[in-house]
Image (cartoon, rainbow, N blue to C red; front, top):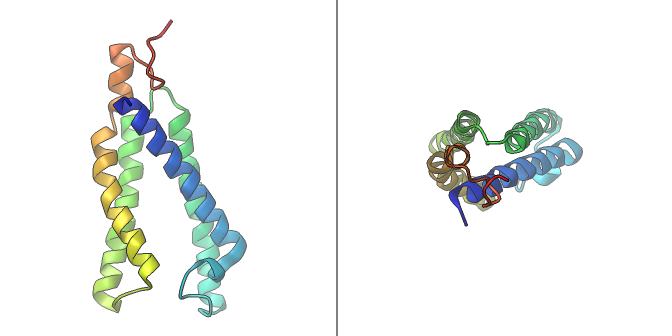
Length: 140
């Protein structure tokens, strides 16, 4: 698999995952947050609002994936936002204590993916300059 194909796969995965998670929060509220089912109407309102924002974040990933080549600057900015979310979780862990184990798993993912995304950010642009598309084939 080429680096450009790996980038395209990760960008699409980020987009669809964030869109689905965001819509899940909008539609189901606290029910989708392990340990927060009884958080009350204020947190439900906040969660649904932030879910819509997260769905929009997923759409931004999908819009980046539609570009050819995938812009490295878009990947870097979207990855930086993702990493900022992980930093927020770490701040919460330090100030509020250990959350539900599912949140810890998400934190691990949010810390592990950014280095890979930053590393691959310009792969599609480099492939385009070299004359190879993300599909792995040379242009006709």
